[in-house]
Amino acid sequence: MSRDLGILAVSKRTLLIALLALPLSALGPARVLSQTNPLPSWNDGAAKTAIVDFVARVTTQSGADFVPPAERIATFDNDGTLWTEQPYYFQLAFALDRVRAMAPEHPDWKTRQPFRALLEGDSKALAATGEKGLLQIMAATHAGMTTDAFAASVRDWFATARHPRFNRSYDSLVYQPMLELLAYLRANGFKTFVVSGGGVEFMRPWMERVYGIPPEQVVGSSGVVKFQVGADGKPVLMKEAKVEFIDDGPGKPVGINRFIGRRPIFAFGNSDGDLQMLQWTAAGPGARFAGIVHHTDEVREYAYDRQSKIGKLDKALDAAAAGGWTVVDMKQDWKEVFPSLSSELSTSVAGEKARQDRK
Image (cartoon, rainbow, N blue to C red; front, side, top):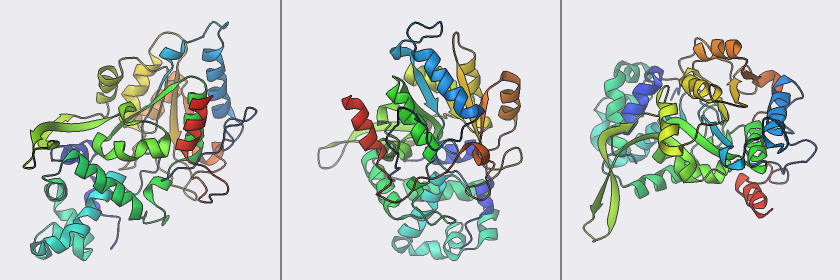
């Protein structure tokens, strides 16, 4: 089946609403930090220098820009900033794969759209179902699940699913330079958060393993959760068919205020959906860092920006130029994009985090 489906061109906000209005809810290797070169996968240049200089400024106690550790908050978008988001958001790939996995239990799907089109690999017919078809897919794949059951299905999916271009697990398509950046910031007293438009129930089951970021430091879009006691007398949390919060665009600084309670001094994004988070971060007093990952490497990853239907970078790119933000050119600034799969050359982020915590 062609994975370049027209239905996937819906806006991210539409996708989030579809995902969250329903009962929803890789091991990313990172090298040990070096004292002399804490960001080994970054080429020397303006972007790397800006990061290292900023960290030095805010962590030098005698300096004018010193920031106490409690205030060293760093926020990162996820899709397109910490891992690949092409050819479409990975959470949608999960939903589509769920339809295929569940199909034997629903023989009627063979004749019902949009399921028939998806199962037969008919891209045009699937695209023709539009937002209505997407909503039906979300409803069918997520209805009636507890948050625990949904988390288990997410973990199972990551264990077997493969990206259509790279033939690697989705959670191995994280960016090696950004893994190093997360570890570098934590080693310098920063608290790192993911602030993403993705569903929070989809992200929390794997982020600590991959990024070293625990569930309580993951802010995402969410649906209403209902407490109830099951037939076995045990309490469970069920997702209702109501949207609670969309953590995208202007919702990001709102989510930061609501769930973190401190304005970041350091933020990274990659698209117009991150613009307001970057503006909110840059507008605070004292030293501030706003960064953008610019996808310019069509050979090692993808190249896209202003015209892209996924991860559009237009207004935020202009704002970066006007505000003097740091724009990371993936092709020029990164020595490598994805982590090596060789266990001899890598360790897990979780292992690195544990080592840092013991220091």
